[in-house]
Length: 331
Ligand code: ADP
Ligand code: TRP
View (cartoon, helix red, strand yellow):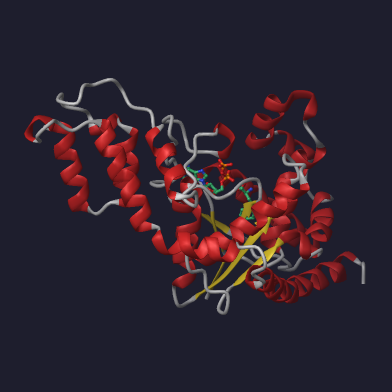
């Protein structure tokens, strides 16, 4: 049996890039018979950048609702909020004392963020990978599905875990492995750069239909006229469509791009965007409905799910923490 664990920061509502790149692959893994999956909302990590409490509360709910809307089975698996299981922060402190400063100073994500934020850089950003290591090691995870930007954090987790194991001469922690799907990682946003909350170029598939269509219409395209051939390989609408469509649908759209004169009135980017929008609605009908239901005010389902998950997570976390306290002399 493999224990799969992954977390997602509550710093925004999940967008199409998160869903295709992280959420669906993690749910798929959780559906394999031999796997036992732990999915959590990294709300403590989100405090490194997002300070507003109301926004965090909303994003935490949206992430949980997304997982449930896409069919994450919480009977077999576990879903919880990081902040509600205090063992995460407790273990993070212990691990801090085994983490060399230069390792954190050289972390790519820290270097990037401290350049961007300059004087506003906070110590939470610096120790971010240590809390992440605690998240993973607390649950004896074997596999951690993440995007390739997270590869270094998993390497650091392994380094920290080996240091502790070596120090105490026993296998306190399981060494986790990253599971990275190279193909899907860089889903483009509406401007062609990697889709990301931070670039404000994302597609929120849970928007009301008319707003979703407005976003799709904003996808950047070149100025090739409606009756002229277009290059599908360099067009963002086509790339997004190809991620969701069947092979048959893709080849039809490709033909329309390459030979628009074969259609009465030609085939322009507006047509392609309409097809992409319709496909999004069709493909995500059920999750969209379920998401709205779960997010509706007064529906106690989400909170109930999260609390039940917290209890399950805590049971595992407290066993690991007991092991750690024992060898370190805290119990
Ligand atoms: P964002 O860039 O929007 O802040 P996060 O860094 O919170 O997204 O990423 C959450 C998860 O979604 C990570 O596992 C990440 O690899 C994945 N992910 C984010 N953006 C994309 C994208 N454009 N394509 C594929 N996967 C993505
Ligand atoms: N750092 C991850 C990200 O930004 C989120 C995260 C926090 C995580 N703790 C984790 C991912 C533990 C995997 C395992 O995407």
